[in-house]
Image 1: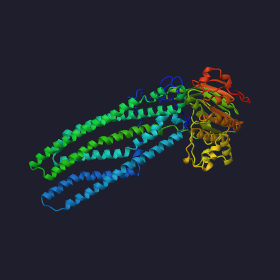
Image 2 (image 1 turned 135 degrees about the vertical axis):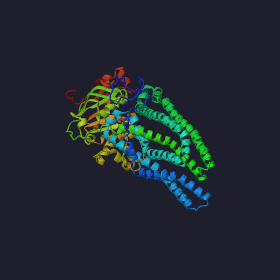
Image 3 (image 1 turned 90 degrees about the vertical axis):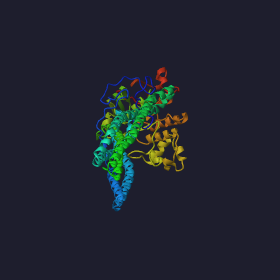
Image 4 (image 1 turned 45 degrees about the vertical axis):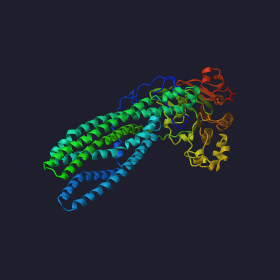
Length: 614
C-alpha cells in the first residue's frame, strides 16, 4: 500500500510481464466474472433500484407540480388564443384577452420554477444516492475492493450517482411531453379530423427514428461508462505501482497499457455524438414538414369556411405542441442514462456487509500468522496459498515484486482486506472475528503516502478512538525524526493541518510518528521510509528498534538498508514466500538483489528470542 488505500489491485487488463502484475495463474471464474470481454456488448444488469430513491425528494415534487402547471397552460394556450382572435375579429369583448394574459403569466412562473427545481432536484438526488453508496462501501469494507477494481468503484461513486439522479427530471419531462403530444393530436381531431390525419402522416416517422437512435445511444452510453471505469482502474493501479515502474524502466509500456482503452473510448464518444447528430438532423427536417402539411390542410379548411382564422392559429399551435413529443428523445435518453447509472450503483448498494463481531482480543505478544492465504483480484490470483509467520517481538522485513502484492499482505495484516481463502490471525485469533474497534489499538500502521487528517498536527498524530497523551505524541515524533521540523512550524504541534505544505518525507515521518505513538502489539509499515534520505532513514530505523522493543514489526520494503536492519527477511515471489532468512544470507542471490532498490548488506542485528513453531 503506497497510500491509505486498502488494496492496490493489478489492472484489468494488463500485459504479460507488467512490473506491477505478478505472473500468476488465472483464478477460476466466479459469479462476478460475467462481464463481456471485448466491451462491445452491454452488461446484463439488474433492475435499476435507484430510480425510485432518485425520484423522491422535496424538489422533485416541486418540479412535478411546476411541470404539471406549465403543461396545462401550454395545452390551453392555443385554444384560448384562437378564441381571443375569433372574438377580436368579431368585435367581441376583451374578457378572453385578460384570460390570455393570466394564462401567460402562469406559464412564465411555472417555467421559471421548473428551470430552478430541475437541477436542484438532480443535485439533491445525486447527494442522497452518493451518500447511500459511500455508506454501503464503507460498511462493506474489504468486500468493496475485492469485488471490483478500485478505479471502477471510484467511477461508480462519482460519475454514476449524478447519472442516476437524472431519473426524476427525466421522468417528469418525458411524461409531460408524451401527454402534450397525445392531447395535441386529440385537439387537432376536434378541430378537424383531416388535421390529425395530416399530423399523423409524418410524425410517427420521427418517433420511429427517435426510438432507433435512442437504443443506439443507450448501448453506446453503457459501454462508454464501463470503458471510462477501465481507464480509471489502470491509472490508479499505475500510480500505486509507480516505484516498480520506475525501477524496472517500463514507463513507456505502462503508459501504453493505461491508455489502451482510450481509442475505444474515443470511438464510443464519436458514436454518441453521431447518434445525437442524426437525431437532431431527422427531427429538424421532420418538424417543418409536419407543420407545412398541417398548415396546408388547415388553409384549405379556412378557405372552405370550415375553420376560422383563430382555428388556424390553434392548429399551428397544437402541431408545435405535438411535435414537442419529439423532445422526449433527450428526456428518454436521460432516463436510459439514469437506468445505467442506477444499475451500476446497484452493484455497490448490494455489496455484502460484514456482520458485527464482538469477540474480544485477548492479551498477547503480537504474533502474526498467515496460513494458506489466497487472494484473487479481478480474475487473477495475487496470493497463492501464502504461509507466513511474523514471530512475536521480532522485526520482519517483507520484500518482493510487485508492490501491489506486498502491499496486499500489509492490508491483510492490519485487517483492511480479507483473504478469499485461508486465515490471518493475531495471537491465534482470526482478524475477521475481532471487533473492528479493537484493531486500531492492537495494530498500528504507516504507509508510503499517508493521509493525515485532523485539525492540527497533534490531532493528526493522535488520530484514533483513544488519542495518546501529548507527551507520548512528542516522543513518537522524536523517534520518527519529525519533532524538529514540527517545532519550527508557526504554532508547533498546534499548527493547523490546512495551512501546511509538506514534502513526501515529512508526511512519511508524521505517518511513522502516528504509528509509533500507540502502544500496539503489532506495527505494520508499508514502505513507510522510502521517501526519507539516507541519514534520516538510518536515524529513524535506530529509533524504530528502540521504540518497538518487545513489539512485533512487519516492514514491507524495497530498500536494502531496511532489510539489513531487520531480524529476518521474508522474500515474496509469485504469491508465495520463497525464502525466510537474514538479509546477509540472501544477499548473494542475484534474484534477491534484483527486487531491492540497491544497497549493501548491513550488520546483522542482535538475535531475538526464537518463537515456537517458526
